[in-house]
Image (cartoon, rainbow, N blue to C red; front, side, top):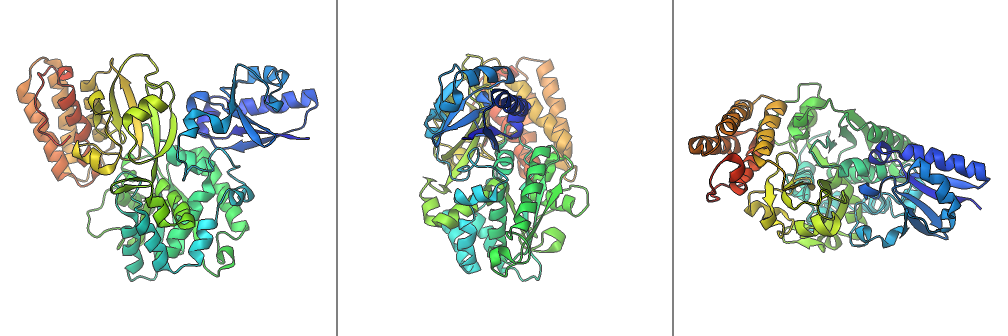
Length: 520
């Protein structure tokens, strides 16, 4: 009898040797005359254990990791095909504490099913949301999304149902669905994991969005730095067309929806929706002034839904189980779950999908295991390179949009980067300003000039430590100008890491502690 062995095809797992492990498993099985079926899956998100290999034993998957090619002969000798004991044995995968405590709605299939098997996708509940949507009116689909409380998972947190209703009510013959897959924030990888591990989920979400607003054309704007995701999506689109999920007759319904990939050129600013649309139209990625909103005048001047990967991938679950069921997770106005991505100085980096309301403390210690260096954690940046730095005194805060806003922070895309007590926060603040200067599209003066002046000012402060009070005041004034005058969130959020570093770690700037009168 052939035994199934699951080995991740996720880019992160491949970067640490998953392909070589797969080849070693196949070769050792042949040498021993054993019949095995190697199934390429997505990653479970336990990145410190990659390559994490799972062996199906009587319907129960047993995990081993991190597996190296050199360990493969010993694993066979230890009887891992029967769940045999070995130093790399972790037990039944479903019982691993890191996974057991999670609430996986969006990532329910990632790491479990073959990403390019539509049969696997259906068997794990895929297409149930689309089938439900096909039986509903567009108004009813939008109503379910509104009832769910789903907000944009790309960082802005705008209510998805409001955006969809605006596009649905817009009078135009042509409308578009655009997926923003330009995941450029440091410490974020949930979009990539979803696209590589469950591409049909994203396709299904975009199809439902098209049905809801009356769009028959969609595009996935994918960053060029994700070649594995490109290949997986390209293959998934071919399969979806062949199986009648995409095309002129979606699942035999008579409805039409076509979907294409568009490769970005590596500009961070193109993660902003209007710069992304400019790029798709063949122009330089410059931020557009708003209004008009993309929901009314978006791609090629037509009403356009622009949502991020996780937003769209949340929709199939909502349609399959109902908006009220999704709204049952989370706290306050932050409903549902978010895949938090743990990175930086942590023992157990990876992906944790949990309802809003979980604390940083739980993520950093219960899941992340504390610092990899063994030293105390001093700062955590949440929400990408322009997110605020939170000190240990704020690790108790629940992760939700409103609570974080009260302390001048943002949940953003759910990326969490940890630093131990050796970090120099003045250098981190300088990095934020330098990053903005490098990535600015140059269209507005506060972002274009302010970020450069900020770098110069910080360099002068750091060269002349200590007690440069006037420079401190000037830097805060500059940050206020960026906050209030920038055209988009690139310049508008750059002050978050700078002000939070100044407020919480003044000693790193050679300053005496002072009150936290600033919004970050």
